[in-house]
Length: 88
Image (cartoon, rainbow, N blue to C red; front, side, top):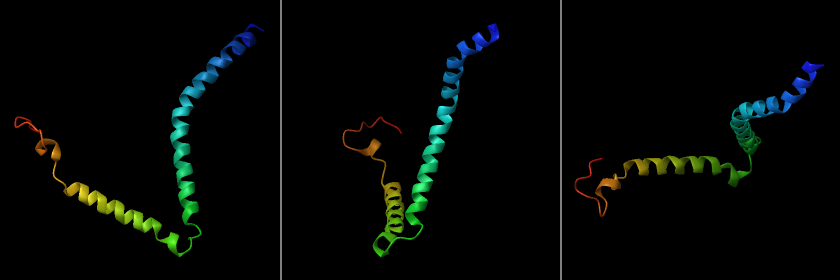
């Protein structure tokens, strides 16, 4: 009887510990699963002609933007108002 009463008192504590442990693991996993599900259902079956090219166009612009951003000079040390003693 005493053991059953003690277990009933510990149940909210155990539930809180279980929630604190599983929530940080469950939320990122569920977000990735939902992202994959939406992405898959966006391309299967393949949409009509104008929407069919959206993915490749976005990919090309993203790669082009990354290349342009990588080729830009570092303006933190050479921009207006930069001091001559700042060594990056």
